[in-house]
Amino acid sequence: MNQRNEQDWMTIRKSRTTSILSQAIKEDLTGFTVTERIDKKITTDKGKTFTEFVSCSYLGLENHPALIEAAKQAMNKTGIHLSSSRGAMCPQYLQQLEELLSEIYRGNSVVVFTSTSNVHLGVLPLLGSGSLPSYAITRPVHWLIDKTAHASMQILRGILEQFGLVSRIDSSDEESIQQALQDCKRNNRTPILLIDGIGSMTGVLPVAELSNKLSAAGGYVYVDDAHGISIVGNHGSGYCFSSLDHQLPENLIIASSLSKAFGGSGGFVVVKDTKDVEVITTLANTLVFGHSIMVPMLAANVASAKIHLTTEIQTRQKKLWKNIKLFDSLSQNSLMNAGAISPIRGAMFENEADGFEAARILHNKGILLFPVFYPFISEGKAMLRFAFSCEHKEIEIIQLSESLTEIKDKGLSWLKPEEIIPQV
Image 1 (cartoon, rainbow, N blue to C red):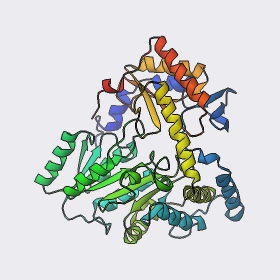
Image 2 (cartoon, helix red, strand yellow):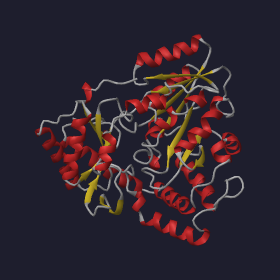
Image 3 (cartoon, rainbow, N blue to C red):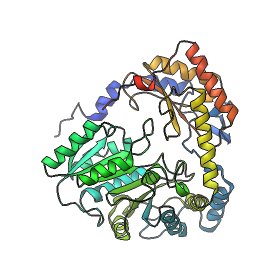
Image 4 (cartoon, one colour):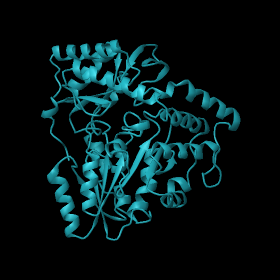
């Protein structure tokens, strides 16, 4: 009989988690139920209307008439779902979507999954085992997981360890990355760096620079660009691809989301060659044994991809960055990510109580955001995360800025970005 390990990560997380999140849900500061939405105004099941800075749909495409009409037509033709793995049967929109995404990514090969998490779960074992033809592995693998990499990658540590050693590093710190690469060289291992391009909470990593470093070390970079897609780049190809001059390096793989700024649902991976696609579609567990995206959402994805290939995407990008620039100016660049190529801003408080009270004040002023506590961030602290959209009106951004000033006037000050100590 196996003995239960009291020090497993979930037990540790549970022991460190306070009741603050439950209290926030109880007061409808987060976890609220939406009954109606018009632009960035939402009505909750309590009958109250708020301006929300929660949604990660940064370009407002989920409200686009073309996506809504495409979803309706698809349901009329095929119903809600073709309940089958894609290898047995799939909707016509799947091939259309992958071809359009390939066009957005300048001819590189694309495979669509039901989520970005399923991309990680399906592709990383293939990468680590040397099964992808364009990404050869000739030495034992050493996975380097960036401290800010999304939880959907962090949680795969036990799976990744089947293919090689796993270390957690700070990719934004020159000493940390150099030390990790030197260790790989000394031990004759292939480094594989897992990062977010734009962090879900804070931070933007220099993808091109990291790709060059890993290339020189004979390694690979796997980038989750879920928060970077659509908001920048030619045809909305995203932060990662645009920072690489819209070229995919030989040693890099992009994973991204269709569920955020893209306006639809699902995830996808961008690789070098159709031979990689053949391996992914025949061996990736989350494709072989999983279903396709629901039919109306696939059709909506196709409609969004077509919009990405028009000038409309540039118009929406410009409006988004105009809104973010306005907020940074009004808030005097005092929040996390100020001035960065990120649609997310954050106010970090030294303790949970102050952050909770700040969220409560904003709620009372008709503003909803994402109040974040451990385990999303460091234990004992609180962060208010604001996600911006091209659909936010100028008056709504001004109201948020003025409300933050009132919070400070009440003595609830957040940390300056330079005061925040990185946690590894």
